[in-house]
Length: 167
Image 1 (cartoon, rainbow, N blue to C red):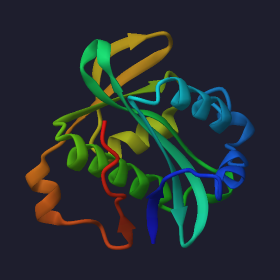
Image 2 (cartoon, rainbow, N blue to C red):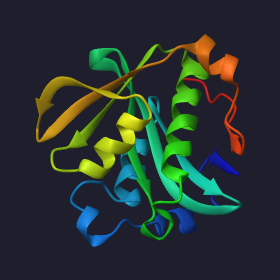
Image 3 (tube, one colour):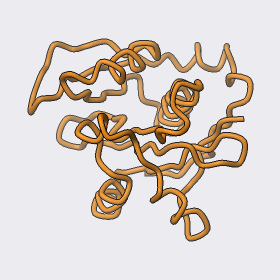
Image 4 (tube, rainbow, N blue to C red):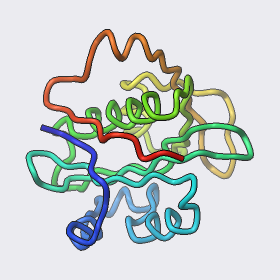
């Protein structure tokens, strides 16, 4: 089962050990850097560990970008040891579900580094489409969320969405 869990004193060290491959390091921030950002922006950042069968396999950080009034998939990584096993797609579904259920958002934005075709393909498979905006070597993508459609389908088998964390 894949689930999003809060990061706390009991799992922090395991989460800090998550890594992507050498070829992917230029595309994603480290977990340590991301958690530092989460602390600074703690009112609008929502970091989670991605677990699969009681094992930490990734990290996702969601956020609210006040300047543009947008909810975002801010940071996302699956450890190199656990890639290509479906965890990324399920974690994206859970992240979208978390924002949709807890903040009633209808759109979620993310940025993908130019040249990161693997991430772009993964985001497209979750419904993200390019908006046409490219800034700072990042292509903006957006997914339109339909709360009723998510409820009608129910959660994917083997996935669990954490309960609300509030603004």
